[in-house]
Image 1 (cartoon, rainbow, N blue to C red):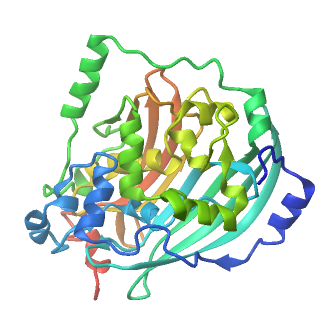
Image 2 (image 1 turned 180 degrees about the vertical axis):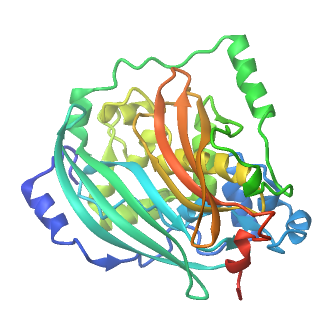
Amino acid sequence: MQKHATITDEMIARQRSRIGQVWSSRAPYFNTQATKDTIRHFVDGFGDTNPLFRNEEYARKTRYGRLVAPPCFLYSVYWPVGGTGMPGIHAWHSGNDWEFYKPILEGDEFTYTNTLTDVVEKDSKMAGRMVIQYGDAVYKNQRGEIVAKAKGWAVWAGRAESGAMSKYKDIKKATYTPEEMQNIIESYEREEIRGANPRYWEDVQVGDELTPVVKGPLSMRDNIAWNMGAGSPFMRAHGIFYLAQKRHPAIAMIDSRTGEMDVPELVHMEDTRAQEIGIPGGYDYGHQRITWLGHLLTNWIGDDGFLVRFFAELRRFNLIGDTTWCRGNVTKKYVGNGEYLVDIECWGQNQRGEITMPGHATVALPSREAGWWPLASRLPGK
C-alpha cells in the first residue's frame, strides 16, 4: 500500500506504454441495463423529475413508446475518465466530450470499451507534478449499435503533495441568509420541463436563454443519492472491500488522523479525507456535476429533441454547501447533414459568481416547416 506515493518517471512511462490499448472491465462497473428501476434510481440521484424518465404511462404516449434514460445515464455504465490508475495516486475527473447517436431505451443493455489516448505531464500550483490522462470510451447496446462515444480526461497527483500545498485551503464554507435560501427554493420551483410540447427549430433564436436549473446547497445527502443512482467501482461493503483491497492494495487510502483504511472516494463524503489531498471539505463528483448540466439541456429540448454533442470541463471544486446554477443560451442555429441543429453555450456557476464548469452542446430539434424529427432515424429499426 502506498500511503504517500508520488508520481515517478516509471509510473508515467508505464502509462504511456498503454496508449492505444483497448480494454474493458472484467466485472460490471454498475449498471449493465436500462430498466425502469435503474433509470428511476439514476434520475432520483440528481433530482430530475422529467416524466419521460419515470412515468411509464406518459412515456408510452411519446415517440419512444417506453421509458427513456437521460443521455448521462451512461455514467452509471462506466465513468469515462481517461485511462487506468497509478498506484497510490489520486485522480480528479476533469471533463468529458460526448457524442450521442442513439437514445437510451428501457430494456437496452450496454457494453463499453476504453482506450488510453494520451498522457501529459505538467506542473501545477495544486500538487506540483501532475499527470493528465486522456481516453476514448465507446458504448454499444445489445443490437451492436454505438449509442455514444466519450472523450474523458482526469488529473492525477500525489495525495501528500496535494495536501501539503493546500491551494484551496482559504475557501470558506458557504452560508446563506433566509432570503438567499428562499431564492434557491424558488429557483427549483421555476424549473421548466419542455416535455411533450415540441420545441421547433423555427421558434428558436440566437440569444435565447435556457431556464436555469439549480443544484444545491450541495449536501452529503446529494452525494449519497448520486452514488445510489450512478454507482461506484469502489463502494463495496465489509469483506468485499477488504478482499478487493488485498488484490489491489493501492486502492486504499489511510486517514492519517484515525488510521482507518478506506476507499479514496470518501473524499466526497468526509472532510478529513478531503483535507488529506488539500481540499477544505467534501465535494461533488465530476460526472455528477456534468449530469446536472445535461439536466438543463434535456429540460430545454423536450421529448422530441435529441442531444447530439455535449462538452463540459470541471475548473473549480464544488464543496459541500455550495450551490450551482446551470445556465445556457443559444449561440447558433443551422442545418447540417439534413438535421436542424442548435448550438448552446452552457455552464455551472456557484453562489460566489465563479464559473466552475464551462460547457457547450449541440442539439437537434424538430422542424415544423420540413416535417423533420430527430428521432426518425435514431429509434430501433430506423
